[in-house]
Amino acid sequence: MGSTVVPGGPARPDGGPARPAGETARPAAPLGSPAPAPPSRDALGLLRQAAEQLAEAHRETEPLRRYPAAYLAALRAGAAVLAMRARPRTRRGAPRDVWRLLAEVAPELEEWAAFFAGCSRLRIEAEAGIGRHVDRRAADDLLRQAEQFVTRVQLLLPR
Image (cartoon, rainbow, N blue to C red; front, side, top):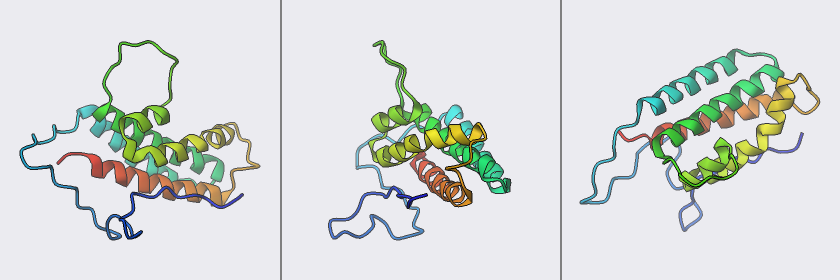
């Protein structure tokens, strides 16, 4: 399988990372702005499920089981963002998946959404037992990406 592209966060103007590795500080709210609302129970529940799914993915030794478990962890984290930010729309339209909606409501996660949308086909193949594209490396890579994404989503939660 080819090299895996890791979505990155925004870079500083000098090209360096937006924040040093390991730093988990959240940006401060502008002065005079209202404090963010606490996260909904639904969002917190979905993040808990994402963490449980990551733990399950770590326990899986077979790539065809690890890959979908990691994908589902990311999917639940994406759904948590939607639970925090999405607003019901009255306009009818074609159904859209979590990744498309996520890119709309959380533009800062657009690269992650595109990455995981690109993993959807392999997840379906893995669940169907088709292993020609889902090897151990692909499953391990996706698990690492899912862990990073879940952590990123956790940082979006207001405290």
